[in-house]
Image 1: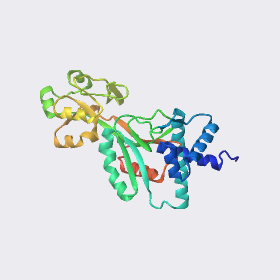
Image 2: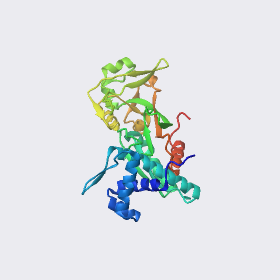
Image 3: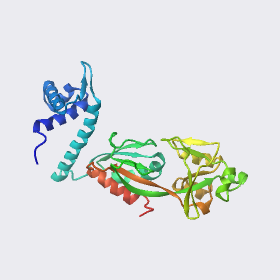
Image 4: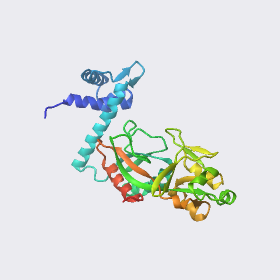
Length: 306
């Protein structure tokens, strides 16, 4: 195999990452123990080799160009992968250590994922977590996340999807609502009821309700005077207060059903579920803590399909 990088070029890549992180050639030079002029020359050689500008430099500031941002993301990942391999081969990392960057949706994160983290951290006390909890679909690669949990299959073929759970759906209402309006006996009755709506954050469309009818999954658009965004649990609170019917995940309302605060309706049409999956980049070398955490989640989260 012919050499592609020289020692000077590899050192220049490290200095480039350091300068980008520090936001200054001078601070990068201090951290590397060399002169600012040496850093500047190394950046000049790197830009000449690539044929693009990586930095916009003024007397007061240093910032990355768009090309520089792209190059930084890939360089950081490549250098971290090399470090990880060397740590594992040298046996220097006997105890897993490092930070796991994780993004989880609000509902599933609170109910399923977050309660599992302390036990993992007690097992591996040198592992830290940087957690994003929200319904915004983060860009796993561009934003530097190791793992993402999502409720729908990824469109990006560059991501690996590991199934976590098929989360069963249920339609619920409060005893007070059912005493006033009665319980729907079939899907056609839904037109006569207040059906609490949830809007998909990406499209702004109402989430269709799913039912099993004659052995087939049926998607229905329902109607109602209440619609919620961002927080799925808001619909549960409205249902508890008597606002109407609501379809949600069974794991979200198990306690309320057991305590009689909510009642399940349309049981003959139940049986539908939505999948939750754990996603990570196909071509990224996973660190030891991330690999251990993947195995831990797959063993710990309810495995309806396994």
